[in-house]
Length: 164
Image 1 (tube, rainbow, N blue to C red):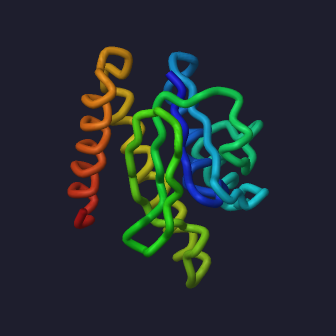
Image 2 (image 1 turned 120 degrees about the horizontal axis):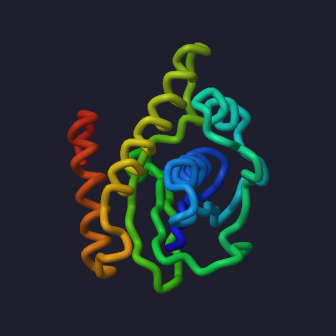
Image 3 (image 1 turned 60 degrees about the horizontal axis):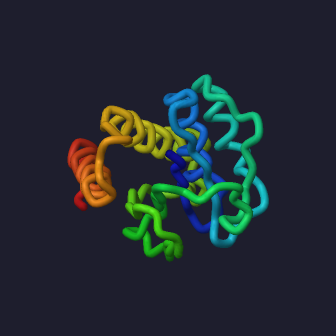
């Protein structure tokens, strides 16, 4: 199964998700990331945080969804619509799910506050991906998979104290 994590700029959140998913799943499934308007580079703090957490960063790059080498089975958008971000709409026949999480690259404040924003987003995505990997991904119908992925996002938002 090919999972596309999609965000507008493909420089932080979708990169986190791609790297984390591939790290946690091994070779069973494959994650990719892309953007509708890619930034052209990965945020350096994203790479630093992944490396700090032991997640491989080799080959990660900000890229357009037009440059994908496979057709995704599942597309998960990670833009934070609560912050008024425009989230891209993927026009394929994939299962589509939205996991809105804040963009840490927009964080302001002290070095510690910015680091906390990157940590929070990293852990939010990791929790969702870990929960996703407990699902029988190959056995669920497209509708059941979409429902299960949306439900785990809602459940984790509640655990995080975020109002959906």
